[in-house]
Length: 237
Ligand code: 5GP
Ligand code: 5GP
View 1 (cartoon, rainbow, N blue to C red):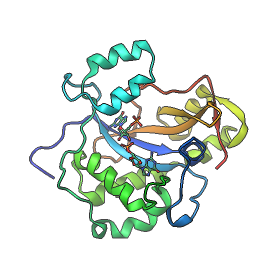
View 2 (tube, rainbow, N blue to C red):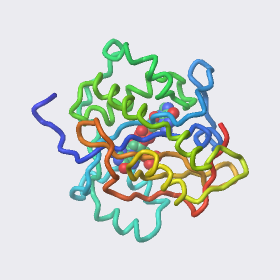
View 3 (cartoon, rainbow, N blue to C red):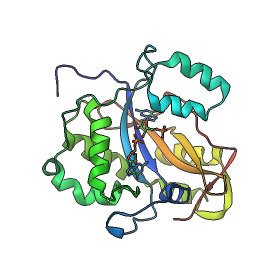
View 4 (cartoon, protein in one colour):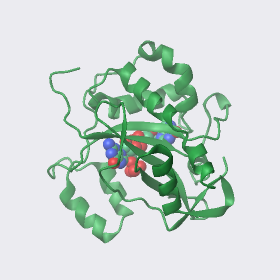
């Protein structure tokens, strides 16, 4: 793509559970007021380093994360430095024309749930600028490969096969969720939780790891702070 190829190590393909985005204090909205399917949706596909680099440019997001993390993690984060590249080409705006044949599929698989502007294209172009411009891929390949990887495995179906079904009362062990995804996809993923309005931990995002070509899943090489408790909910959407 460019002469200054980013040397990241792998991607996180991050998928969000809409029930856990919507039932927090922030709430949610739907594009065109159409409720998406009760399925995981893509949040982004993020180039990542396997080892954080230097101290300079310590990502703000990482510090924000660390605020909620334990002391052990905090002491690591201080030494971690920059853990991923972002905004690699600021002038590089996503054009609707470049991804026109993917829009129907993106609408289904990568819908925005934010109330800020309710336009999924805005979400895709934000993710393109922040993460996609560091991927060494053209926009069409970047989005097409994320969609293809997501289409390989239906995470909600994989969880349901393991008896982990959306419920507003039931809780599940994080290890059962982790095992179900490893079994169902063949690869170890990372999990992230958030809190519902009652402060209870719920599965929010699944981070699957992907090779540098964005063509196949790999076992995640890194653990991350999960904000999950031993038992978590999977709220109804
Ligand atoms: P949060 O602080 O909500 O976890 O993350 C805020 C933003 O920082 C994410 O939407 C994403 O753009 C970026 N981010 C957070 N964690 C990671 C990570 O582990 N790898 C990469 N590449 N980006 C991340
Ligand atoms: P990241 O966390 O990737 O840096 O940023 C996510 C940004 O995209 C936030 O500014 C958020 O407001 C916006 N956004 C739009 N739609 C969504 C969505 O469905 N989920 C999430 N997590 N963020 C969204």
